[in-house]
Image (cartoon, rainbow, N blue to C red):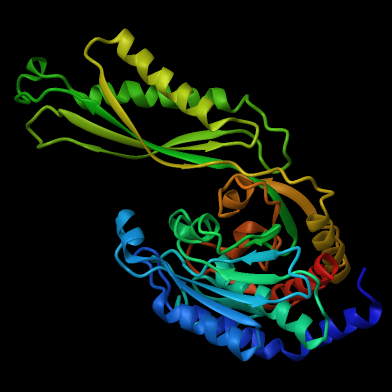
Length: 413
């Protein structure tokens, strides 16, 4: 446990540096890091400079080789930044993993999405909650520990990574695959009033429905790919309904889902459509096995072709993110965060799963326990993440920073 005196030192540091914390978040919001395309050169410098200013023991700026970037069809440089506080023995290693990229702002904003405006105790801007606020909280949590004179046993690393919004493959996955990160546990972006210990996986696939062109005045001479696509859609929606009965045993995750998200095809108004493409999103609960989910979908498509000789289907997997967790609620990582969150916020912090997917899956695949915890508000919708007027409460940023600092001391000292 952390002594009362040390608790007070850490809390005082965070309160004393409240303006610095707010200023850093505003500067990050003003630094564009939209993905796509992936703007990292400026923000990686801002992050590295803050690590240097706060006296981190080691700072690593890791640029992914251009050939690796091009393999994924990307063009802009991918730059990960690590700020390291070294412990006396180097073990265990705790990694904090926020991401630097944001989705583009889109329309509908009432404030400047890159302005970092403060209104009624909220900081507004793209990335405020997802995930630049977490960069700030993780960074200043370690700075508070350093200022308090704590000698950690294990290393603490803030790994500000790239491409979470497009899969994370050149972010944490790259760092783990190349042995640059070797953590024993990880804290990943999250919200201040909940701990997420499980996440769904996600499968993206495309289905090509092939037909045959003909003059629209004589459609019977062709094979209408759109009409065949309707049968495919009906089968997918029937599958969607059946999935609602497949209940999860993880709080926060109800059942698996599937939804068609993109459909397009056709040549011209007066030509029978000969090709129609359907793309869908299938969320995979931690109770399911991805290979079995893929087989289920393939069986549905094969069944359609068996019952209709004119049905010509092809399909391709576009992306597979495996589910993560659940990490046991009594794991020391979760217990430490929960203990100090309860103390700082004066409320019981729930441990739940969420239906989304995130970079924690890369840690889980390597049997590294994780907890999602950060600065977001009590209600997910209040963060407005990925929407107009994204925001975060200043008090949540400050208090989450205290929680993270105290939990780190408990875990590593």
